[in-house]
Every structure is written in C-alpha cells, then in structure tokens.
Length: 408
Image (cartoon, rainbow, N blue to C red; front, side, top):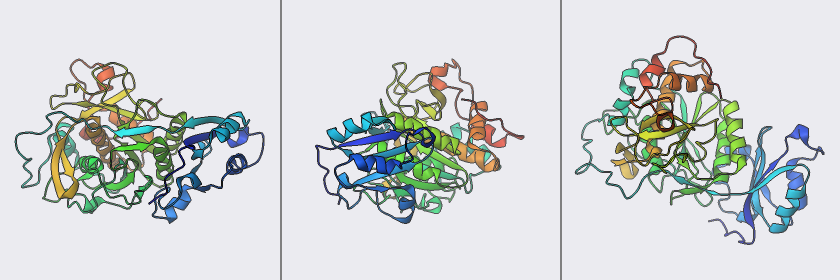
C-alpha cells in the first residue's frame, strides 16, 4: 500500500511552456526539482511500460510524480507545498499551475433500471442496444478484429467468459490499485458493450473481435483524479495502430492540462470518445472531457431513440447512442442492466472499431467523419440533444470509398 500523502501538500498539475518557447534549455524536471524542497521520482510512460505497478503503488505519494513529455503537453504532476506552488506560478517558463480534481463514472443510480426478474442470457443474447445501432448488420463486413479499444474506467473482470477472448494487458493509473482487475463493475459493463465475444454464450458486443485494454483510471469507489486520466492518455498515445480511448467518465470541471493532453493524443491518432454526462434535462450540461472539441461527446437515448431524461445536453454533443437499461457483462461472470451516458459511450466506441476494421488505412479523423456522416437522423433532430444523430454502425462500416477527415 502507498504511504498516505502529507495533507499540507496538494496534488498539482504543472504545464510548462512548449520547449521552443522557454527562456532556458533546462529540462522541465530540473526546473521543477530546483523549486521543490523534497526529492521526487518522476515516472514516464516508458517507466510504465516496463513496470506493472500503479503510478505510486508502494511509494510515498509525496515522493512520486508523473512526467508527460510531449511537445503539445509538457506536463509534470506531483504533490506540492503552497510555497512551491507560488514559486512555480512566478516562473517564466511555467504556463499554468492547476490543482488536480475529481472525475466520476457516469452511471445512473437510484432508478428502476432492471426489467422484471434477472436478465435471460441462457443462450447468446444480442442486447437491444447492439441491434438498435445496426451492429449485427455490419458483422459481415467487420467485427473490429485487431482494433485496440482502451477502456478508461474501473478495470475489467479478467475472468469473465465473455471478455477473456478479447482481453489484452492494460495498466492501472490508480494509486494503491496496481491491478487492472475491476473492483467496482462499471468498467466490465462498458467493456462488454464494446466487445463481448461472439462465442455462443452470454451477450455479444458491438465489435466482438476488437481488443479490450483495461486502463484503470477510476478506483473501486467509481471516482478518480484527472491526473490519472492525463497519464493514461499519455500511455495510450505511445501505442501503435488504430487506437480508441473509451471514456465513460467525466466531471463538471477539469484542468486545462487535460485539454492539452486530449489535443496531443488526438493529433497523434487516438480517437477519443466520452460520455456527455448525466446532468440532464438541463441545457448546457455536457461535462469534461466530452466538452472538448477533440473528443466525441455521446448522449444517451432510450430504445425508441428519444433522449434520456438524465442525459446531458449542449452544443458539444456530437452523437447519440443507447444508454437506458443496457444489458452487458458484470463482475463475477454475470450479466445485468445499467443506465447512463456511461452505457452510451461504449456503443460508439464499438461502432468506431467496426468502422476502423473495414477501413484499415483510415485515421482517427476519418473514422470520426464516418460515424457522424452515417448517424441516423432523429425525429426532432435537436443537435444539442443528439448531435448528428444516433450512431449507425452498419452505415459507417459499409461505406465504400475514401472517407473525409472530420473538421474541428
């Protein structure tokens, strides 16, 4: 277990000026360490690739930080004292000093989410949401084989019979939870919607042959730090090939450093998909990171393609997907229903995997264009509720020709 951090020191995110804009050639770690009164070990994504541990697993949290070494996102994250914060704010090569914040899994609670009795999965079942987005019609063209979907969540149940076939090795960025095992259940549910296997048992996901990478950024209580998400995106960006970051999480506020990291990841080829939030029916309620223009914000609709009362609305909503009484995998090898924009998000991530599987030479901007271009228009077509419409996995997968690139 990690040693409890000194509460006089705060978790902070420090963004430096880009290297070509700094007044000194000093490395950002040196600038930081010159200011700090205690010694800190800054881990990089390379360190993570060599180690199975969480960011600060087994260490004093005051003595471990994370280094995002990207031109568009030169970021250091560490616990700092008030004096160190003040000094860094005055440094001419520091762009921003921001306090870390909290993000949450975006599943609704307190609703009657279940149908009468337990879900019937005695034989392989195609959940309604999977059919609603026309995923089975696309399987003759693509099943998402080999497409990497990073489930940024609470982890994934490593023994679930419907997930093991597609499960790959991920990473935990949660302090004190070095394993990517799911101790909450939220991540396992989202993973099943993306890629539960086509194996004659249980349920099937949108893209039944896509690869599932558990990226733990939410702890067992369903919450996490923005710094964990930033570090995770840095790690995902280092991977090669088609990469989708599925983020069924969010918060009402986020540090600007997260926006910088999302931009850097997107520009490096990662397709970013996030839940819009569960703050409806009020207007202008889309949360972060879905609020960013480099991220696809997904609202939730019911089985008639009408906006869910709880779903956030706003001009940032890009596309809609099923998010009410969604049947998927749960911890312990079982199946159950859940609701929220958390459940809508993986439908779009899965549809992206299908589209990428049938357009292997495409980039993330082209896949985003395909998803938006073939979305099904909805009756009242209020763009602040539905964006471009309800995701149509079949249309985007079967498009013949060269896709255009999505324009921000």
